[in-house]
Image (cartoon, rainbow, N blue to C red):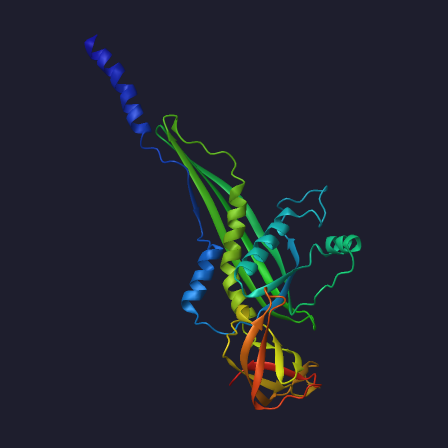
Length: 318
């Protein structure tokens, strides 16, 4: 009897001891750069330079998978596509290198304008189109002696295209894939349990956007920096852009006359011939308080600028 009582006490102790080694739920996903981390990395790796802030708009972003689609939902009620669009928009704004405009909700803006008064919709350089082409979830479990584990995995793939807003030409495309998972386990009934985790969907799409955003941003930045002349008054030249575009007081800039635009018989596209340098400027002061209204005042230090010409632009000295 004494041996039996010792065994009866020992069995729960062994089980309790085993239960203490169960692992809590853990999340496994592709690394997703936060906005702050992205900006710090860019500041650390790229020297201070002129930044041409391209005007971009995120247009149609659709869900091409079966996930979330029912007979009661149409294209206007696409949570997966809207989520991917919102994530990409936030990443582009946080990069500090683009002026991002709303296009999917343009009807709402127009209705608001009808109430508050006339408004001006600004055209963009590039339209970003995209789609969620793959999305799925799997649940896997393993059962051993007195133990169970459960793993939930979400996978997503997004495809993006850059479209020239003036010609409709698709000049760049990229694909990004991402996944996220969570794992739970128990031993002899002790440990953690995991229900359906909705946040895995968000993290999988976020990881896919993270994979594609760097190549997208690099492509958008390929266009050389340039800005326009706002006005020429009493020897002072006012140009668009200031510190937020990397323009500093004392900088020397160049004024160019645009080359003639001709239409290629081979491709059908308009081709602008090389520009001609006509003057140099030195930045004297700056004005404005945000990226949409800032500007710089400069003086001519070489050459001359006609006050009535409309075919001039300002760029970096080559």
